Amino acid sequence: MKQDVYQKVTNKIIADLEKGELTWLKPWSAGNLEGRIVKPLRHNGMAYSGINVLMLWGAALEAGYSSPYWMTFKQAKTLGAHVKKGERGNPVVYANTITKTEEQEDGSPEERTIPFMKAYTVFNVEQIEGLPDHFYAKPEPVIDEAQRIAHAEDFFTATRADIRHGGNRAYYAGGSDHVQMPPFECFHSPESYYATLAHELTHWTKHPKRLDREFGRKKWGDEGYAREELVAELGAAFLCADLGLTPEAGEDHAAYIQSWLKVLKNDKRAIFSAAAHAQRAADFLHSCQAKETTKEGVAA
Image 1 (tube, rainbow, N blue to C red):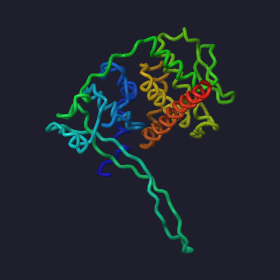
Image 2: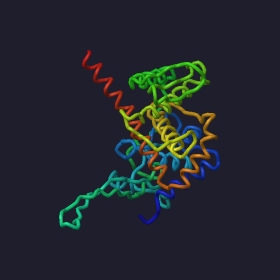
Image 3: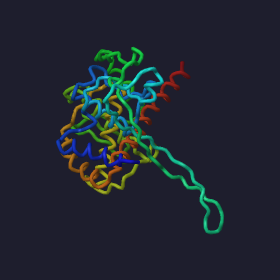
Image 4: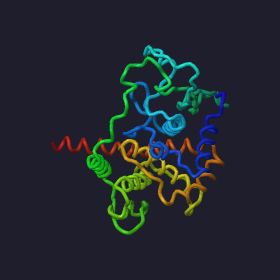
């Protein structure tokens, strides 16, 4: 790649953290999306995932875009539109693997899987003229509060996680494989309760019988701990976007920021890895919904 995408994205997030800002909460705190919170969308309506969500949320915030739609120069042209003169695009990345066959010393062939990443440029639809009208439609107003929270309740119940209530701490206990939450009424808003639950259920997905995620954590506050907390942070942000919830920075974020900074400064690929793990965790929790729906369908 002509530019080091890993370093560029990492530097941006490090700069935000050094100012005490959490990149993944900005789209809500800035209020720039004018209504329902969504992940960035491709020209065909499919949502971006992983690190691209963070990159495009940050770009939308910086430029003040309210539309979630992004597309390439060529995609805009195919739709009969054109990018406005002087507009600059934003990078997104595509990751995949290629298989290469190499000859070993004994002459036998051996296949190697080689990961690769490439960057390409996309533009927000607010930088493009001539697109069909639906691309320029304003987001619909936030759905009814009670209905929205009920939807979140249904989502987390469908995971069938062992969620217990009591005490004044929220945490995931690996030994007993349960999530502990303070009582609902102890939170200052319903959104903060569900955002916290999303964080802890992202931790819940790391269990060996689920995603088997392990960063070599040996004690509280070490690098492995910081990496797992970063995954849980991003996983909660992705889930809140999917559920239309508005997360807020928790009281413990300030304490975590320094450990996250250390990890990111030592490894330019750390945020990409964390975002990928977070996306897998969110996808796993979404897959629980499909299983629940299937069961209900059979029962019906």
